[in-house]
Length: 373
Image (cartoon, rainbow, N blue to C red; front, side, top):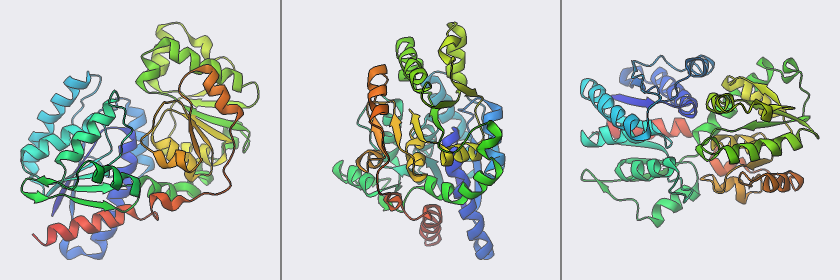
């Protein structure tokens, strides 16, 4: 039994780590019927240091294939990926192709597999922000449509799919919908204590609950100097009250350098991008989170930290309805309004995203399905 697992962006490395761990544990228990896992790294995230630290920190098996496809337009990148992944799939002839999330790598792998009539398992299926100007929204909608196994992170994702008419027929078989929880919750539970011990925030000169953690990288900020300046001006106001910590994304740094806007970083504590476990340690000890990232909205909640999301919409609607997340956009006044109203909810229900064993259940389901063929 062979699964090809395609990754390309850092959040996918996190998800692939716990998926690989589940395969390894399952193989140890059933050596007579092992799963052969073949990892393909498209290279969508181009920073070698950032990628390498994730693979090392999370003990992800070395990819068998490195496609090296980065720094291209959406269309060029996706097209080149489809071609390259198809070559890999023809060579490997897997039983199933496993994809995560909503990146160009996700869609390209799904298209390649679909055209070769190879079943697709889409992990994080059913997410909807209802913002079709986001490339990720298009990627996730199209990937869901051609997948065989749709593994959702929550009951809300199941509802989204059912409202769109799922399950449907794909390659003559009925699609299967599952809600086993969020594989990223698995990873946070596995690494939280080790992260805190390995990367104490005091080593960065920080004290518990005395700083806010900020990440920014999405095109609605990076493609607009006005929006970028507005967001950073709000952060500089907040920094007068509390330390603002920003692991600066390479794309944001490049834009600030190119436009001679380094002044926007004045008064902020800036770091290069950090390893996964160090980010988890910072999350566990911060006062609050400000981000435009998808995954960090959930991770903030899992660590019991209130979050302001610098977007007008989110696919992780449960973080908002539970009170742990508030959408504030990129306008300076709206961000500061959200900051002034920030409070920690009285209760935390992490079971919204499962019990921390999603990867184990997903692997078990796939093995059972393909063992019966």
